[in-house]
Image (cartoon, rainbow, N blue to C red; front, side):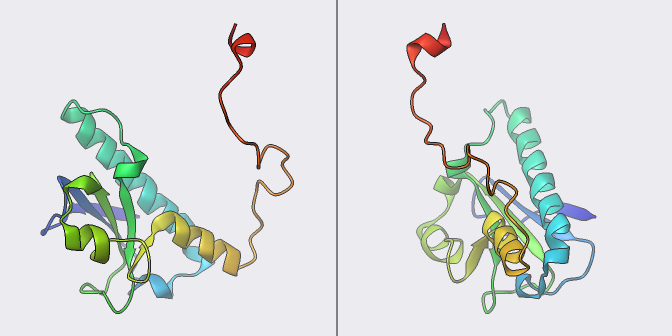
Length: 146
């Protein structure tokens, strides 16, 4: 179970925190058993953002303008697991965009964290062995469209 609140110091027009009702202190305490919780957190945050955008008459989210993830130690001010949903990142100030919420050592995108937990636990990639996994998607030839 999760709860979504607005950030009290928003860094963009839409800045939400998705909190776990289960107490987990920090992202580095997570295990592969927490992956369903993380996926629920991401799904819930995305759904709320889409609802907000729809209410405002805006289009659906543009992935390149969306930042979803967690601060990592030592950059934690709240010791309860919470996922940031920030949109659009173009609203963010320079320090937030290039340092505090930049994917890297202090901010981990949710999808990267989920993939890392699965990899560390040896969970196989569901697309492994699928011949379409490495397809290069280019333009569709005109004869295919007709």
